[in-house]
Length: 260
Image (cartoon, rainbow, N blue to C red; front, top):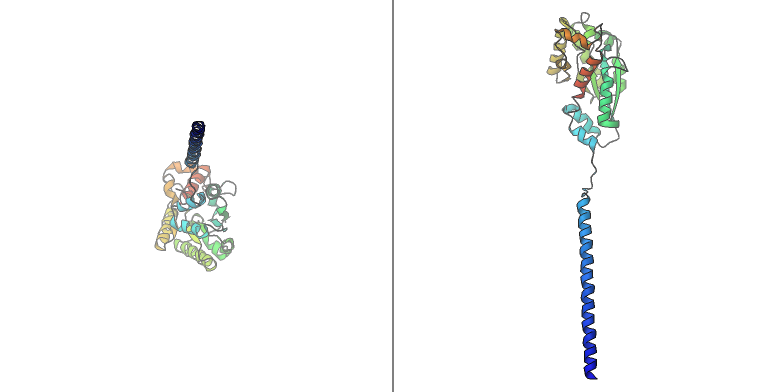
C-alpha cells in the first residue's frame, strides 16, 4: 500500500512540475511577444519633443533682410499682423496688375495671415505731394514696412534733386513722429530707355539712402541696361509704367528681400 501511495505522490509531483514549467514558458513567451510589440510601436511612432512645428516661424528666421526680419520677430507668436504699404507714383501700376499685387500674392502664400498690404499712388511730383500734405494718407496706414518710390520720375525736369531729397526726408519724418518703428525702403521707379538726367536722380537717391542708413532697393540691376533698346520690352509705350514683364522683375526684387 505504501508503495502505491509513494508512486501516486511521485506521479502527482512530476505532473505538477511539468504543468508549472509549461505555464511559466507560456508566460515568458507572452511577455516577450508584448515587449516586441511595444518595441516595434516605439520604432514606428516618432518621439515627440512636446513642441509643434512652426513653418511660419521658420520662414521668418530665413528672411535675408535683417531689418525686415526684426519687424516680423516683434509680432512672432502674437496675434498682431505686419502691414506693408507701397507708396509712390503711378509707376506702381494699377490695383489689379501692378507689381505690388504680385508681391502681395507671394508673401501671403509664404507668411499666410501674418501680412496685410495697401498701395497708395499719386500722379504728383514730390513737391506737390508734400505741399498737399498727402503724407497724412501714409500716416493713417500705420504701416510697419513702407516701400517708398518718392516720385523720382515725376520730378524729372520739374523738381531739383535737392528738393526731391528734402521731400523724402519730410515724408519720413512725418511718419516717424506718429510711428517711430516704421521701416522705410526707398526705391526708384522703373528705368527709362536712354534717359539722361533721370539716372542721376536715381543715383542721388541711392547715395542719400546709404549716407542716412536707409534701406534701398536697387531693382535696376535686375533690368536690362537702360541704354539698350531691349528695355522697351519691359514698359508700356508711354514709358510711364512697367508692363507685365517689367512688373515681374520689380516684384521679384521685392520678394527677394523676404524669401531666400
